[in-house]
Length: 252
Image 1 (cartoon, one colour):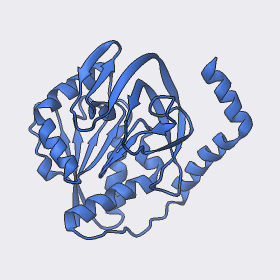
Image 2 (tube, one colour; image 1 turned 180 degrees about the horizontal axis):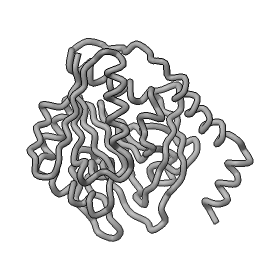
Image 3 (cartoon, one colour; image 1 turned 90 degrees about the vertical axis):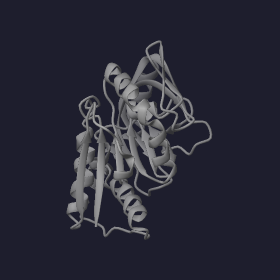
Image 4 (tube, helix red, strand yellow; image 1 turned 180 degrees about the vertical axis):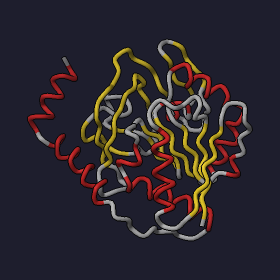
């Protein structure tokens, strides 16, 4: 079995270690004796979503994010068709914002790709902190790092998870990210997938099930180290004194 993974515009959206997410997907396939092909799609290269089993759209600087969104306008209908046909997508930070109707860079309103009916406004205060969410998809919490000024509003969509510690989509809803069909949009960096092997395997199972038209359940790997690291973060922010201290810093 083989999966083809597209990394959209790694030459522009390279700020937050998104290659680590690609490496996690590739290694977790290889460790199970599956094949993985990675297609970096750089500026100026054509995009054929029919070739891809998984699409990763990462985050970058404000300028590079705007450029990437501009270039993707040419392919937004194909991208939306990929999503509606249950194509697997992981969109992170700037990539997450681009999926909506619009987003803001400072006070500049930028047309999004319209793949989801979500919007992102902007405030000068950045949310920069570790974050933990609890997702309905997993028993194990999801850990990561958020760094964004955007306030994303997802309407009636299902969030990726509820915020246990951190800020999330907008600091008010208590939600983080979005789930739609086989798409996950999220503000979590880290990179996300090496810290959360359960999320990696979820994406791989969805992609394999769609491609091979079977209900795929991957054999577990030895994730003791990864899950222990996850637990250390969760335990740290479960400490009430620590959480109170962080809350005081956040609101003063």
